[in-house]
Image 1 (cartoon, rainbow, N blue to C red):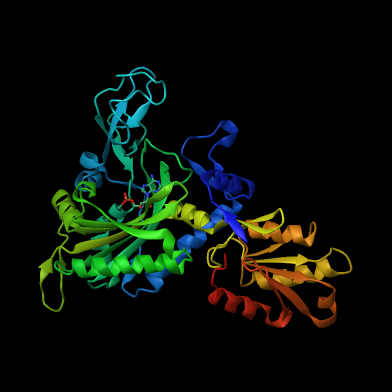
Image 2: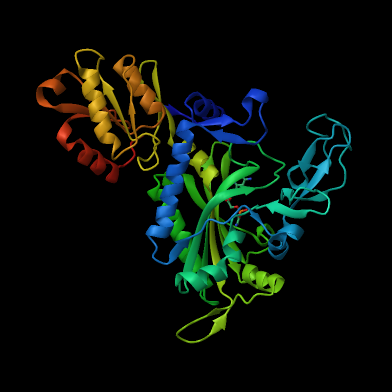
Length: 444
Ligand code: GAP
């Protein structure tokens, strides 16, 4: 068996064809760098989000959740340094008015759009935050920004959480939500978009303990991706050089994934010191110190942050799962090897034929399985074609009802990766699928 390389074009096409991801506002010609998640895409995204949430809040007794609003007081972004520092250097072509990131273009070369030489303006700093106004008037109304990271909602609520939820240092606050950046370079599908989702966790520690926790989270986050079923050889760390560090970070590692266009950042793990809380204390005039109830020491905690892109994770999961597998002379199947925990459909139930009561039995089996799994009922077309349809959307298990089912109350359980089939009694089906999910190991 052989398989060919995944490309971004193939992913975009599969995502559209099979209801994962659509271009935003497509009927109006599309909105650049904004995407909509279709029926299967939203299930995939929610499953990744739930997996992350469980990993953080259920599997760590010292991490609590939060859901802060997207719009915050504009002082938050002055304190965080985003108003001043969250900028990209941009140049414009004087001829065709195209805009480029100065660090991503050769300023001596001709404009890549219109070919004019010596046409670039001097680089100017361009803030990436989207600005809007609260209230009916634009002039003089209150300026607010759409948050460019979810993290500041956590810092701004640090005092609330400490005072009301009995957490003790070291502890974390986790949050998933939308973030917005007026990015200039937005190609590569959902990799870099102006509206996206982040899964962030701020871990508050005693000053001096941050290096130990930084190491802990580095390891923990890499293990998480392996648990999510991502192939190890597709993941690596990249340490930030001094000139790459964000304005708040004293040390940072990215977890990178080998996307179709090359190795790129998936998640950042940042040692943020007491930068954010100190700045918020200064700008708000509120005391944001923490008192250790054993030693009575008072300090501003240090922060280790893990910041993953949710929408970018969707792209990673799709790219890692995609395979075009040659299984016979001229026979290629497209298969998504999703880990069962994130697959939009866990079990498809298929009657071999519609007649002779098989469709009715299949529907009954499907209704029973629905209580425990995301199911899909499909009675149309040749059985081989129906299997392929499920392979292409990454359904790990198919259950087929045939004439033997009527005799002995057993069904065929078919595995996506190996295409193997076994006979299982209907009575033991739920438990068997549960076991298979738990012990899942990717083949292919
Ligand atoms: N709070 C820290 C922070 O926001 P970041 O490295 O700027 O750090 C973290 O962003 C993660 O958010 C990235 O690793 C990436 O997965 C995701 N991300 C950032 N900008 C994005 C964009 N324009 N589109 C999609 N995902 C993005």
